[in-house]
Image (cartoon, rainbow, N blue to C red; front, side, top):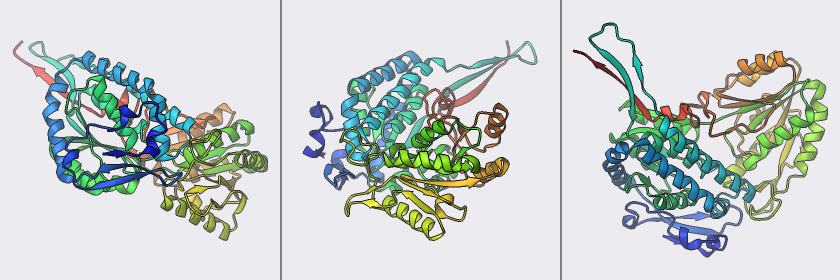
Amino acid sequence: MTVTQSLTKHLKNPELFVDLAGVPNAQEATKRFSVFNPSTGELLAELPDMDAADVSKAIDKADAAQELWAALTARERSDMLWEWHQLILIHSEDLAAILTAEMGKPLAEAKSEIAHAAAYLQWYAEEANRIYGETISPPSNDRRMLVIKQPIGVVGAITPWNFPASMVARKISPALAAGCAIVLKPAEQTPLVAGAMFTLARMAGFPDGVLNLIYASQGDAVGRELCSNPKVRKISFTGSTEVGRLLMRQCSDQIKRTSFELGGNAPFIVFDDADVDAAVEGAIQAKFRNAGQTCVSANRLYVQSSVYDEFAKKFTERVRALRVGDGFVPDVAIGPLIDTCALAKIEDHVGDAVRKGGKIRCGGSRIGKSGTFFEPTVITEVERTMRVAQEETFGPLAPLIRFNDPDQVVREANDTIYGLAAYFYASNLKRVWRVAEALEYGMVGINTGRMSSEAAPFGGMKQSGIGREGSRHGLEDYLEMKYLCMGGL
């Protein structure tokens, strides 16, 4: 596979990443697909475009390695995860450069993501040693009753383009800690950092077949094979709710275990007792990190009427100061959107809001005639009928919605099929508890715009997903509980 000069010029050790992965059967793939830098349009790499037959071979390889991997001690698996974590930290600058080149996010954000990915590996290196069973008091003295936990088996994982390093680590590390072999398909827009991470995994000593990487430009065939192949015992997917529904249907014939982290429509509520300055900073973090291209991005910003004007003024001033550009340029806060489809969606949302009475306070337009850069945008006087208040924008567009009734705003915040993340700012402790418990979301940020951590369970309610990633709870999704009853004692 070919990695172009456009990418290697950013790397300190290009020779380490030039092959980007030991992809199984890659040499047999006759087709190739290209990966481009969304900031410049430059070609970054040409990779083998693998099909369902290639996926089947990778599954066979994982299945052959599964028994050996599960038979290792927890300490042995932990040591390899720990070594992988260390190698990622050592090569973090190169990994961040690859991430910025293929995804576009500012280099500072890319470095933070690499550190976050390493943190998941460290966490589950430790959790691998904490898989506990239990004993149960028997109803009679002639038997003993136990519960043990065993790895579920081969796992098929599909990761998104917006966090192409941390999502790989968040899915792979608990599976490996539990004793499961992996077949991973990264997003076709951003596969390179996953390949580099797999290169480091080989250096960390993982046995052949335990980690298998699939490069493919079309996810349909890969998804169908992962869902239909009986050797795959679990599917872990992060992406849209629409694709999640499809994968769930495909898994239903085999009643296959699934973990889904799907779409969101996060509310961000500022009550009249909030610290407005802190709320402004929290909204900047929650809305504009990764150019608004996150599943937990603040999508609907509700501000109580008595502080609406103050918040809008201060927030708009901060948004105007955000610098847009190539992620490798110093002091850039917002990079490009991932593709032209994302650009068209945000333009549609802005146009719809303006036609229905919304006021653009700053931004509102694409930058340049080519490329996928869009101005950080604030729209005030937003109504519920506008598309921006109903749909996930996935871009640097912040709609401000005025409210008066604190109870009604919680009902509006919950009036969605999604339930991934929510945020609110308030100081009254009674209100804090009441609102936190009333919001129908898997994660609630209270007086903070950032809450992701390897130590905390990440996941949603309703149609935002099934299961949790991160924390000790994330390990349980890769384990089967087995009850043992021993009689004749």
